[in-house]
Length: 113
Length: 109
Image (tube, chains in turn blue, cyan):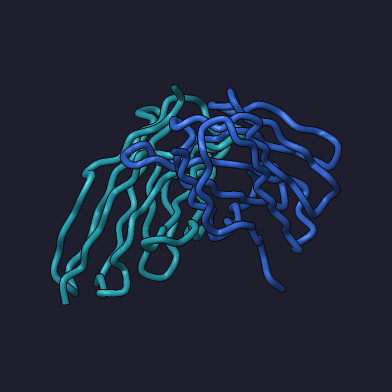
């Protein structure tokens, strides 16, 4: 039982490049989330998916797109990376929408030059 | 921004002492949750308190909730060096979570 896994762990991009962050969970959770964490800012929600087939914007969605590929997988795409997107990205999942705690992946540290 | 705030931002105590951190949030909530984050790791869920509860205990953790003041506190009793981490509150409004800015706790052996 791996919980929530994320790939890659680290990534360096140049401005304008694109990439996709992958997330998978094996807990049969309905809800999945993408957050970014910046120093002194705590975590901010980028996008979430309350169930397979649905996605919704969070607090800071600009510059990102998501895909809920199936119940297990939720990917985050940066189409044209900008230095402001340098951050640590966390994926999380939850069994009930907010009803129980979230389970977090180990994070992806992204630097955009 | 719906992001909450926590205070203090940083707290340093001796092993065995109690640590108290506070959280304020901005919206009506279904529940409020506390998480711990060790350096370089993901967040780990500690405890959840529902909006109709005022106090909850789990081991050495005690959480209080005051919905009229939109605030919560986390008390860690008899702290240990292993409790050194950042602690975040998260207010839950159904599908979304709004995290506080975190308290960095250092427990000195």
